[in-house]
Image 1 (cartoon, rainbow, N blue to C red):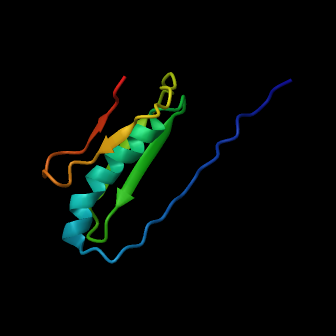
Image 2 (cartoon, helix red, strand yellow; image 1 turned 30 degrees about the horizontal axis):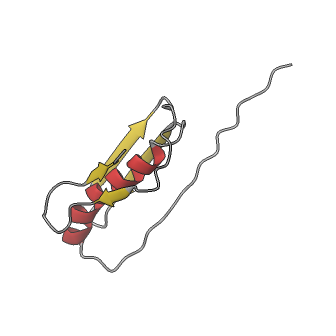
Length: 92
């Protein structure tokens, strides 16, 4: 028996009152945070963000990775206070 694989897409829209300049500053940090969450699951994904001034930010993971166990002491450091790029810290 042949079973066709069904592709399911999740489409999330975020509407904000940010200026186009602020959207372009926030989009990379949001993209990094979302991809770090999705990287914990053994799935393939594609994230694409279009800002109001037509800038595009995207990230693709075509092959699902081995799931990373969720840690109780997980604390994301998005780097907003220091102005540094967003980073994710895992303390073991």
